[in-house]
Length: 290
Image (tube, rainbow, N blue to C red):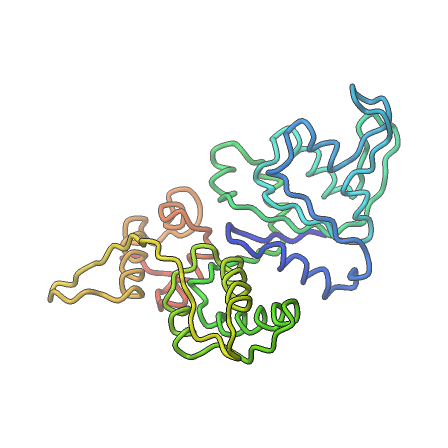
């Protein structure tokens, strides 16, 4: 019933949509809810609905998002923004698979796949009492960690080609591709806006390019704060070496502990799954103790 998409990078909605479209529920509703955009006083009504006259201003019955998504999928973006008092009600929905409208006396059974995403570190939120531990475990059935575009630059070519096709059709153009020089510039860029920034830049170049190839691209110039570690022999380390040394230093300080309070993931402000992935990529053993 429930999957969880983390952590804090754009494109979560696209992934949630693909999960829905590739599932047996693809012909059923796909309902999106941005929890951060809803006032706390309205989240209850938006998610679960209300009966006419149940509170001031409730002039007619309202069907909530969960009821709308029956037999389909509901995507709860920024679930970390839901107030504690409503987390209890959401937990009951996930466990019992039933809802009650505000002011209603009828329990409504619901069959919904729940996909949740957040820009917060829920483990830290739980530790600080802002997110329920039982709800966290109920959500954390399948975790999909979405790395930023700058950490998966091998995807830039495929994504650029995809967006080029889309905006060629929209603009009625026939641009065949992107020059090698522009591709190299794109791969060296740090992409603070992630996939949406890439999409917007491709759209702009499609509209401005008069040739059959994109030969120029004006990438934003934003300063990137980078800290370089210098080895004892005076040689500046690569970014991978720098990151590896940083993780090893954190593991040494935490005596090899990765998960939980006082662990390296907590110290580095990373989800443990992300830290594990980085350790595997950098060849750091999980049993490292310094």
